[in-house]
Length: 595
Image (cartoon, rainbow, N blue to C red):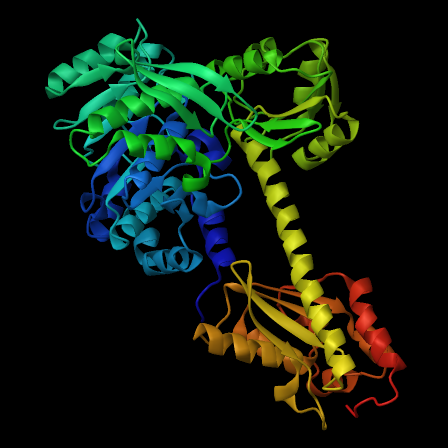
């Protein structure tokens, strides 16, 4: 059996392992036995690089990305582990903003299948182990590790950090972390370790003593960010924020520019800068690195999901705030934004306290509700019923995509569209936008194959067939039909493109490539495709189109008795009408090559 594809590997991870995003509480493991066993099987990779460990109810992902960006600006190779992902599993595991490559994901899962079968870890446990292993093999200088849920029993909590960061404490996941703020704080305080200082982003009279007690037990330094640092807004534009960083009430860094915005980000920036202030005593970081790092957080770290401006005229904002503290800040900020009319695309999970959620919603908005595409999603009808009972104007839609497209149609240029309520709502939207963008790129590649097929006919070198092979969004090889005698199989477009791609890439398998071909592959080309195993194949003209202009391969299908429809290959039609232009040109030529 050959190596599985990336898609097959993800299918195993998503479908075979318990996953909190899908199942909720039942996937949460209440001890560290599995991750300890996994780490030992891998040679304890988490001990091979320094770690900054980040926890908190809100903002821990933002703070992790901010710190990573500054460390990258200081010239470090920085590993970053966060969760959940939005549109690509590999968002969870990054080095200097670059996603873990697909082959490394495949190789890790294949190599660890015996251990996985024996230990039966959760999805989160295996991804944490994957991150540790990848960072160690790639020899990162430092890694920033964000907890998944809580801290004390989180799978990431086998690390010995050089610094612990706890952003803030508010109510979320009470069924697992406790129903009071001190209980939740005690779980987060579990990441505090001896020989590692701790930064807590926000003071709270109910939780401060929890952290102070833990710090005294460990005999380490604890600072509350707001005691030492403040962020002062200078200018806020659509794209950037200009800020002054105050340290003990004096301007420390003046006119800092940052590309992240949103109601929570001033606090997150303050927490991150406090952490960086402590790191400056043990790492080679200076003020220049802070300025450079804060200026391009999104670009340098591939940060997404928080206060994302996805469009203008109308303004489109997506944000993954989902608990009371986060949502309160988001909706307060939305009320202050200029808009003739506000449209809200919403979805939530079943555990959501709907009464508390609805309290934040503006009464004069238009609401488009749906269910995020996870089993934990609250059925659309339940959300619609709750919104209508609160006197809100609401329509229901089968998917988040449908709800978003309806809001886009209804909104005028001076309106605002907000998409949120759950991380999974934003994930659904970003997945749709990613597929839409990929579709645009795919059409460009198909048009290149069609262009080559037309040129091939005009030049007289062969028939109206051409193919391109694409890897990582770039064309790596092309091939045109140059058949001049009875079915020379090496001269078919797809065969030639595959051969050229294998030569260019130095590999006999193209499992991380796509093929765009101007016509549905014939059996000979199907054989080459089956052998090369690309992850997707797109074709323009159909086999029947070919038969209509006397390129009839049915005799070959009859010969091998294996209709294309029975072959398990990822074939998809694309731009047939445009592809027919090459056939029409061929049909008008008088010097058709005997095929």
